[in-house]
Image (cartoon, rainbow, N blue to C red; front, side):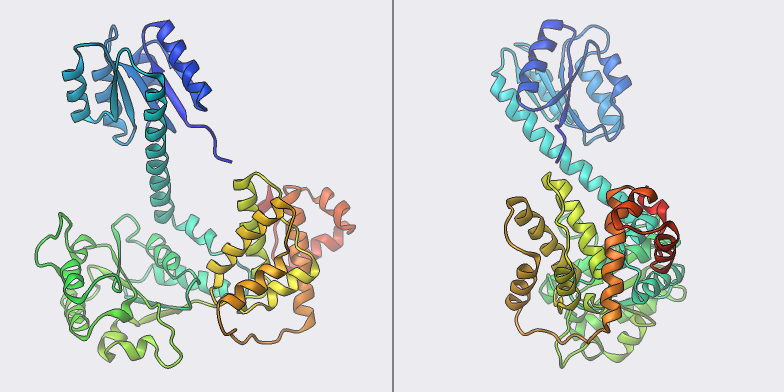
Length: 443
């Protein structure tokens, strides 16, 4: 469950600090009080997870000077200023500097709570966006998101590490929900361009003329540079590349040819169309296809990834269980088999949805994972064909899932896992080695 938003209350008057703190604490905030701006600055740094409420008139450093210092170290920090009568012009100037809002004494406590809640929501969004940007620029974090021990996923991670170091353009193909955008970010993050811009645009989101302007200009539109210029020196990611018209394909080919070798801007193209009678090779002119597809990555569909299905389900179910404050549902043998046999037309994205619904219905004590999977695949339309699997594959996948779940539950305690699964130490070690599992991953 999400923790309460912090509020730092700064005022030289103790009674004011106490009353504001008490009111906001009753409203669900985690409050901290400071008698001076100098004291607060020692505690509030960049990415501080909260909102600041400060009086303007204080001895020493006043609220305006504090605001300037806070804005210089974190311009996204919401600062609400409390003003006395006649200080409104000063408060308006503070808004220009970057204050979130101001309250004039005497103020309505409910108005304080309303402002703090809105500022808290804005702060959460800012911090989430920052965390996402850091995550998308951290190659090691992104590679860990590409979960799976199946041969196809092992090979995919190796290909990403290899191609990440190259300058050549890359074409990413694969069914919907297989993680193509994540792979594009990973290719950028593990290579020498990681510190430069990664700019993505969906070619299917614009009409032809609008896409032409957004891609190539000639002039900035709506205050934004054309993405080809914005991505200069970094990576330009073209999602839905099959949606490019012949005229735009010609312009893109000219843009690529004008860059020379190695290219100043790397292009990662993503194909999202998978009609039975049409491929990306059919949609693109041959010379453009061979320039973009000098290196091609085809992502494996989930239904071919064997025991990865159970690993992914367990991981996402745990995440949702933590989010909703309940226990993750345990998979039985029949449910595990159902997950392994399902066609998964929506791939990992579909599995995530089912994991969340399984957690929600488990919290209510009703329903079954089997019925969720069957209903979801019936709603998706005609089922895809799935290849048969030997019984040994099902047994191995279920066995690996049981050991994985137990290791997670006991945070890597070998003794506890041995007792729960009734396995001698040597047998457990052999099975963990067989499935590529290491105790350090669970500590």
